[in-house]
Image (cartoon, rainbow, N blue to C red; front, side):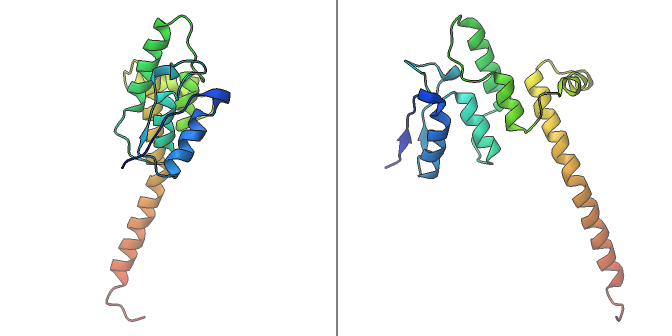
Length: 154
């Protein structure tokens, strides 16, 4: 029988408790848009998606679309209990500092994007490629070297 988990955000611990539930084998985690729920609210969907992305768990959600949905929802509700600004969630997911506004603006313009959240995702992808490129270059060099010494008596 699959196990699930439902957390209220008392003391802002919904994500921490959901993380523990995932580690303990929970297959289903209840969330809500903007953490809307009775009392302290529930686990914020975008926070769970961001967490799963950060730890490398496949989840099938588009983080940017979830955050944009949260932004639309939050803007339509005068008093909501969002536990964290949406920009904090995506900056934290991709490990960006808060002073990236110029890079975000440049990325928006360069790729003709309209969403700051999508721009940050693109920046994250660019950084991943930049980190992997030196490894790929070294791998090619070593591969070429190994090909050139084959058949040579050492």
